[in-house]
Figure (cartoon, one colour):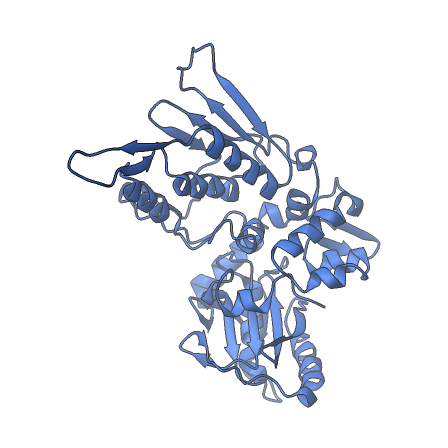
Amino acid sequence: MKLPTSIENILNENIVECERVEFKGSWNPEPILHSVCAFANDINNWGGGYILIGVEDDNGRPKLPIKGVGLSDIDKIQKEILAKCKMIRPSYTPIVDVTQYKGENIIVIWCYGGQTRPYKCPTTLDKDFSKGYSYYIRTTSSTIKANEDQQKELYELARTIPFDDMMNHEAEIRDLKLPLIQNYLYEIKSELLEESEKMDFIDLCKSMRIVDGTTEYMKPLNVGLMFFNDEPQKFFPYSQIEVVDLRNGPEGDKMTERIFKGPIDSMTKSALTYIRNTVIEERILKIEGQAEAVRYFNYPYQAIEEALVNAVYHRGYDIREPVEVRIMEDRIHIVSYPGPDRSISEKSIENKNIIARKYRNRRIGEFLKELKLTEGRNTGIPKIKRALKNNGS
């Protein structure tokens, strides 16, 4: 089964953060099983992670040149991976793929965030299993055994599946549109695009983790409908962006309003294009005694782009409120409900040191990262401030 992203994106950290990738030079069952279990538990709601067999670790980075896996070992290792993963409780099976990078074979284990967490697995793979089962989690780029407090946190997380990763019982598989899926795969340069032309549609959706359920009751996940349905607003009312131009004052007779709907990515891009074309203006200031004029903008586009994409990423899609962009004479308000996650304290906001421990929409974040619309590394506020500073705002 092919991955929904490219090996280049994983190795070069273009999309996938290093915390979500583990490198293994060779097949080593016990630590790899522990890492599969840790990624499945997804305690930080990162969306799971990837284990690359055939790539040696160099202080958290891939060691070059890549060693790869011998052709004769690939089939054996794949079978062993699936056999060992049957030891995970409750049942969990990662997606395993074999891909190539610069002529070398790499086995990739995609460990998506599980829906029936917390997961545990044997502490050791000794024959007698004398140490029993343990829960494992990821902290930065390491896999560790969860302590008592972390186990409690895992159980608390188990009570709540993120909204974007929930099954939508009101929708049908036919509500997921193949052209939108293929366009996405084309944009992210996924090898799955070629496979999508000939594989069964259900299998394609399973590969992308946008459906769930049993054979007789298979339903789309919310994130699949948000990206791969022409009118996701039918399922998530007011999941739209409203841009209101109030530069003539709230009571002005020239107030304009534009509403952008559709799949999350195209809706966001359309709203940004509209703002760039109708709001952003370049100014030229000539300084006496200086040959070069100073060029600046009323608003730096990079700051608006970062703010709006983050508003779309982190909003609550179970709340019937749009993302609002209010354009004033001297400022722009971008409002997204229900506001910051509880893991962000008031003190961190006051100190402008905003670091979110958990993400509200882990799957939306995955897709936006693949499309290079966001990084999801708590870089949003610094990026906005830097763009404003460089513009002289």
